[in-house]
Image 1 (cartoon, protein in one colour):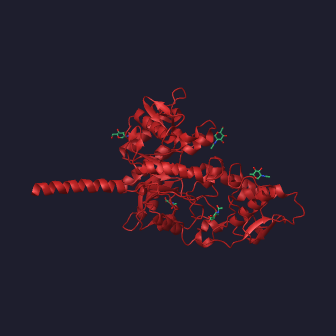
Image 2 (cartoon, rainbow, N blue to C red):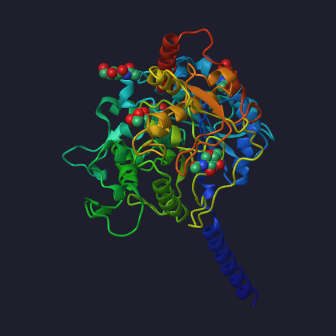
Image 3 (cartoon, rainbow, N blue to C red):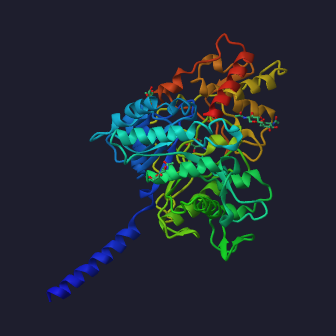
Length: 497
Ligand SMILES: *[C@@H]1O[C@H](CO)[C@@H](O)[C@H](O)[C@H]1NC(C)=O
Ligand SMILES: *[C@@H]1O[C@H](CO)[C@@H](O)[C@H](O)[C@H]1NC(C)=O
Ligand SMILES: *[C@@H]1O[C@H](CO)[C@@H](O)[C@H](O)[C@H]1NC(C)=O
Ligand SMILES: *[C@@H]1O[C@H](CO)[C@@H](O)[C@H](O)[C@H]1NC(C)=O
Ligand SMILES: *[C@@H]1O[C@H](CO)[C@@H](O)[C@H](O)[C@H]1NC(C)=O
């Protein structure tokens, strides 16, 4: 009898374990990239509340901003803090790395502090377009940071380097995942780095962007960017394995590259994956919803990839919020990666638990907006000879990326374009009176000029945004040329960041 009870008990345990495993939502594994390259970033406490309201348990930051970390303190949200690329050089000095760890990690390590789990050392530092700028400093910085963490008794915090997927590839004459190898110019570096990560039980972090595969090549089969089940016109066949989506193919190219340097089992974290919603014909909310729907249901089912089947994957979506001053060098879509708008309003239905029950996310609460005033083209304008020049100026300092081909505000006439640009600038300038003049070409209005698809935004007010937002002031006495030069410099800095 006792035996049978125990046996039944065991069965029940197994059953409960199975039920529990099935019920674990993807949100447990799912993280969000929280970038802040915005003129009016939402206040950290508003963002943190929104994360909680949506059951999001992990965030990846691009810095170790004190205000952000204070807002995260006392929550059960796991955090990846980051060291920007521009600081990698100084981190090659161990004492500097040790101080950084003290100030930005150890300081928050207490009961009720911040659950810092990773330190990202750099952001895509080996991007081919950086021409090797960070090749010499990244690995020493990684070593110093992990060693400093270990020396501070924080060896559970792992240092890792989020890398772009262009650090590996497969040969053009054999473009299959099993032929994946690290890029030739950095093979030795990657080999050492991977060994160091393995020695410290730290993960390899990679950013994978099916959207970019599609964006960068007109010949790329659209369906291959998504995770739809069913017939794919052009699957990739690799030694009996069929790849029906580029995410799996890309991930397994990395697995093969790791295997080739003796660490085929190194844990992999997806540092960024996502789909933008504006700024390009393929950057739409419809495509984004399709992409996330497929991705999240696979994650929830722990589907894994052909080379790592049935696995839990740690994934950080890119990104949480739109960022209106991200560099548009890669493309106009760069400012539209958020699953939420800049103000924390959801864009499309999504189910972060991967159960396909797509609903709108819980929006940010307590967001205060500027008054409902827009700035538009002045239909009584006498001299329009300087219109293009003024639109250009507005778009240099505000985000006009929704105006381009295939975007939400495309197809307007020159007047519509001008109104959009003037309003964008006026909002960035916190609706200062002088910011809606443009040599008498613009006037403020209380009538919303938005159309069904094109959103003329109202910016959020200072109370909802951090000081970074309202410290920005108008052009003042500086000439337009000087400002343009400054804008280009700022863009360059963002690119290098
Ligand atoms: C990180 O620590 C350094 C001290 O080494 C400090 O100067 C820096 O401001 C900190 N970074 C942030 C973003 O708090
Ligand atoms: C890398 O080199 C290319 C070609 O020489 C150049 O156009 C680009 O500006 C360089 N980029 C950086 C970040 O140095
Ligand atoms: C990793 O650990 C092994 C064994 O302790 C050691 O020989 C090797 O130098 C370490 N590699 C790195 C890159 O730290
Ligand atoms: C409106 O702006 C977009 C983006 O700059 C441009 O492609 C388009 O040609 C403009 N339309 C007119 C009528 O000027
Ligand atoms: C415009 O943006 C606001 C604020 O985020 C949002 O509430 C509204 O639904 C958007 N309208 C359109 C047409 O996208």
